[in-house]
Amino acid sequence: MILKRTKKYITNKETIMSVIPVDAKKTMKHDSKDQLMVRLQNINKVYRTDTVETLAINDISLNIKKGEFLSVMGPSGCGKSTLLNIIGLLDKASKGNIEIDGQSTENLSDKQLAQFRNKKLGFIFQSYHLINDLKVADNVELPLLYRTSTAKQRKLLAAQALEKVGLSNRMKHFPTQLSGGQKQRVAIARAIVGGPEIILADEPTGNLDNAMGNEIMDILLELNRRDGTTIIMVTHDENMAKRTDRLVRLFDGSQVL
Image 1 (cartoon, rainbow, N blue to C red):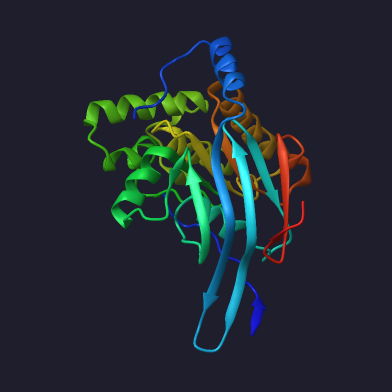
Image 2: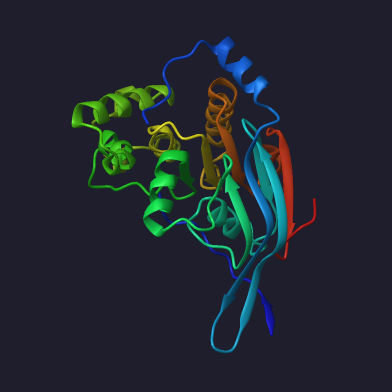
């Protein structure tokens, strides 16, 4: 028996890009516009229990170009977050193949997947997932702890990332001392601190009012246009989706647009 899936969210996470002139980065993005960053081929995802099979993703094939800003929309429970989990290598497809920047991930070990994620991918979550007992700078440094960088390097990279999102003056604050928009900026800084080529954002404006949501979108658009970062964003907000390069719609686990 196949049932409609229940909603699932991603719950987890070499050096930051050197300063490159904006015009040079625009040229770089333009030159690489036909290069594929993500390739999904006939992806299926089925969750099984002893009595029930739940079809979460149904035969999705999708190509995402390098430097593209893609939004994914659909009703709750349609498979958006599961698809993001699979692209982010946090969940494994039941069938099909995923390539990231030309690298097939099918036969990578858990350790290799973790290293690949840490180098290539940055994650932003609707609920921020900051650690309240750590200062802002320490939260941003977290992805770098899994690399062979020194404490001095980590602090420098965290400071650079926070400067990009306009929070240089909040480095020593704790998350509980920040507004929702500021927390999401910290989450973005954490996502970009390692210089990932892809950012995966699951409802990054979902907990924010319209004005603050637009500010967060402005930051994401700037990262995309200035640095050429590929961004894949799940959203319920049609206005936010319209600001991206392309929109993919899902319904009951299938791609309908």
